[in-house]
Length: 232
Image 1: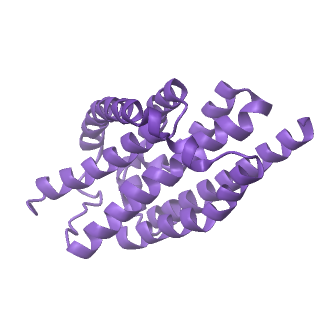
Image 2 (image 1 turned 180 degrees about the vertical axis):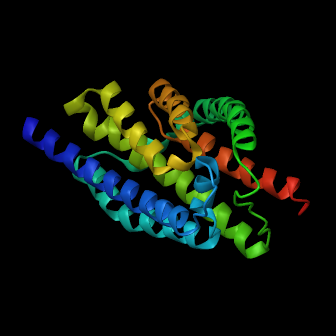
């Protein structure tokens, strides 16, 4: 049993590490290729998603490509992924916890929005692409694919597979650090938001609350950009 737990933890870490390195690598590449003398760190980071369609496509592809391995890992251990997400008897509770976590996440995001605004100069990238195609791509990649699948990889994997080897809290924190590394360009927002999603995961024992908060926060950010840019 101990050897099986170690193998499961290794598989979970491998899948999540591939996701982290692939996505973060693309972001670093975009930032570096758009570097200009005089930029500060906030300006440089802003270019990590400067080609939004390509960025969203990368997120969708790497998350979906890794999904069969994730499903297989749950299946091999006799864990129902659907029950891991939510169950009929706890659905209302899970949704309420998810909405509460979303509210807290949005409050945290307000503080970070101020930091970004204060730190960036006129050399920073400004996302002005409000076309229908790009907006649909953003919603698909960020609100649905990232909001759902990243919770499986960074929260579900940590608790169900790495927790038995590293300890549940240690595993959740380690995977949350990887989650923050993947989203390095937001300077720790993902780490603190991830702590909120870990809290509701541990309280409900289901991934749905985190998925609601994660996807909802990303959707709120998309809507905010559309409103502030005058697109709606």
